[in-house]
Image 1 (cartoon, rainbow, N blue to C red):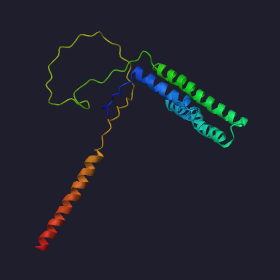
Image 2: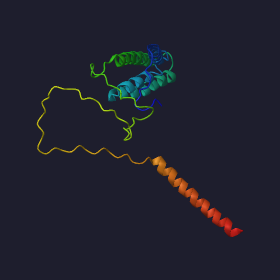
Image 3: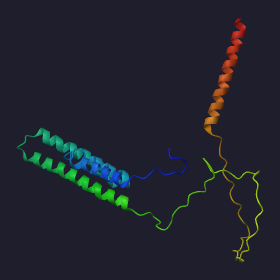
Length: 196
């Protein structure tokens, strides 16, 4: 969608903050019923197994608490305990999400001094190979200081050959379909010629 090698546009800080508040509120304001949403977002951001386990465990915990609240009378102390667990689960999931999301957006790149250089633009689409018909102008050599060269090994290894790109599968498919269509038309013309 964004072209070859182009990164998608980054979100503005306002969008990030709005999404952060929305996901955190889903866990707390629904009284813990949707506490799995912030936990799944943390699991997607980090990709750690324990984050995924915590997100999956929150679902039966919230459902079980709601079942206890719905099945037992209001005066039973177990309903108070189940409601407390669900509310604490919602608060925990929201706080855990906020901490993980803020840390994720503050992370520094792995190599702080390295800035990758984009490839040179040679036109629209993929980089173009040099044309054998291109006119080159003679250039005057620039004098350079002598450079010490490293010793050359006795048996140099030739560089590997560039990989050959196979023909696109779509072209082969279209070619096969055209061959089938021409065979069908030939048979149809032969049948019409016999019937006349």
